[in-house]
Length: 216
Image 1: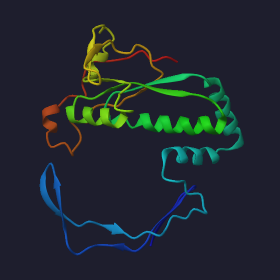
Image 2: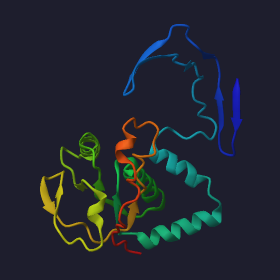
Image 3: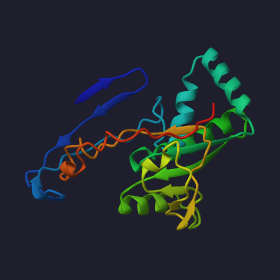
Image 4: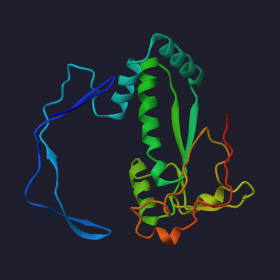
C-alpha cells in the first residue's frame, strides 16, 4: 500500500500487479517490449472530499475550499466581469488545453455565483498539420470551428499588418488585435528528448520578438 497525504486529498494505490508477460509497444522509436503495470483500485470514496472527475465539478470543489474572505473577493471579481466576453488566444497545441479548462471553470463559477461570463476562443497557432486537424476536431461545435487557426507564431510580429491563412476556414484574415488572455510558451521542439528529430529545430527558441496586443 502506497499512501501520500495532501491537504485536500488522500491518494491510495493497492494491490499493484506486474504481469510476467511483456507487452509490445509501438512508438516513433520503433517496436519495444515493456512491462505494463496495472492496479486494482477500490471503488471511489464519495463520502470524503474527492471531487468527481470532470473539469466543472473540480472547479466547484476547489471553490468550496476557499476561505470566506477569498470567496467574497472571487465573487466581487466575477460580479465586475458579469456580462463580459473574455477573449482568449493560444500559441501552440500544447497550451490549447487552457481553452476547455477556462470554459468549464467559468461555467462552474457562473452557476455558483449567478453571473454570465462568456469565454471566446479567438485563435490558436500550430505549425504541424496533424495537430492542426486535431485542434479543429477537438474544438468543433456541430462541425463548425468558431476560432482562427494560424500556422506560425512569427506572424504575430508587431509590424505585421498582412492577412494570413486561417486553417479553419481556408481564408486569409488579419491577426486579432485585442485579446484578454494569451496562453503562450516557448517552443520545445529542439529541447524535448522525446522528439527524435530535435536536431532539425536547433535554435528554434531564438526567434525574433513577436507580440500581440493584450487588453488589461
